[in-house]
Length: 147
Image 1 (cartoon, helix red, strand yellow):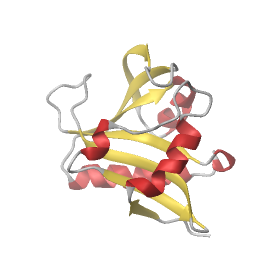
Image 2 (cartoon, one colour):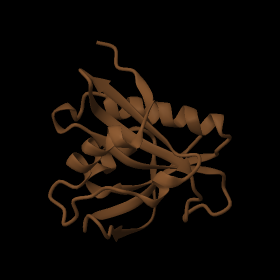
Image 3 (cartoon, one colour):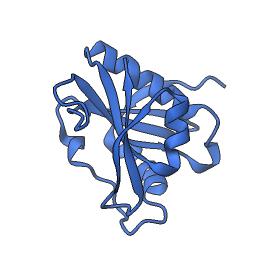
């Protein structure tokens, strides 16, 4: 099976976003202010009419690299049964291509500490101090990938 990354509508990705990113957290919604940005792109992979992987990308300055043209990655989610199958890497590669098209110098994300190994394997580096994310109450760090 060849998985294809495609642009999807917010409504299509929201069930997976909530199921993966809010599991075990005090919040049960997954709406981001950035979903309304004019340049936002929701990437996803669909299998059997279900979204099984998603990520959201938009132009936003990284607080750890002020003034550098950047795209932020947010809402990275892969169906739990498919973790470790390469779908996340496919989404990252598609997002990096989008960032290059938009002349960004970096891509960055607010990564859960539990996902740091994933990001490090894809050449992201940790920047700055860790913090507790408000909606999830989980430890995070900013990660950056240079293009």
